[in-house]
Length: 343
Ligand code: MRU
Image 1 (cartoon, helix red, strand yellow):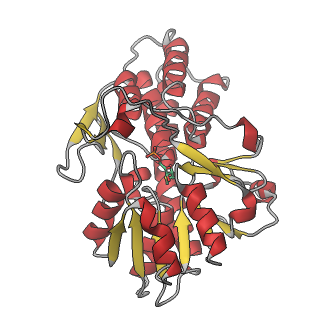
Image 2 (cartoon, protein in one colour):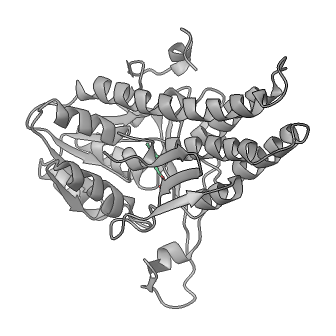
């Protein structure tokens, strides 16, 4: 089983995703600054995993503070630093707000009580993520049938969460339930999360799959090899617009053209009821990610580049949204998912 992030006595341990698939390298983070750097360098990535890492970053700030009176200020500093790491994934801000509530709540007990509460909350966020992914897997698996060809994009797997995954969690659960289907993983340029990470996970689990380059999707859909698309999300609006890895929108348009259902799997913590499609910040990343592949230059020196990391798939192209609570269908008003004591 792959566990992406773990809290231990002497620090937070994460799998270095920049080293995969060649090397299973583990990084020990001793303070919130190292966690912030890990998120920025994409040593840990994927919306839920970023959220959990940030929560654990705040918990490290608590653990490392030996002066009770300085603790709230230290936590606020860690919170601010971690908020600045990546701009798009809703789960990052969701997890940090949940942490902030812990130290903003009045406390009757003194001593180490606040420190312990902060650490406990971060660990709860991590444990809940596992349970949530398993529930998403179970709900989504009902949509997968024997004989399916399922296309996925980027990595929405165990490596993007604590364990199991969201879109890949659905695939994992369906496979564990004995369903016989085939997976196509898009390589996902520029950073190749599909080739490096999703292929790594599928191979590890022995789930039958083939890797394709991003520009092969239309061809294999036309050939009838794909009858379902399932992806994760970095942010979902109340009305069901989906922000996810660049290229997702193109796949949704292709799926529509070929009458293939387009599913999105994500926890409720990815839904931002206040976000509007035009108001989402789309991360722009370094030009070198496009001009180079794993350090090797592939474009002429000085080539100008566009490098948006995410795109927005309009709600009209989304066939269903698979959450831990239930599968939501259009027309979307996802606020109903929060009404019965969720989040
Ligand atoms: O830039 P990344 O690798 O963090 O982008 C990840 C994605 O776009 C995933 O599909 C998304 O975060 C969902 S992960 C369960």
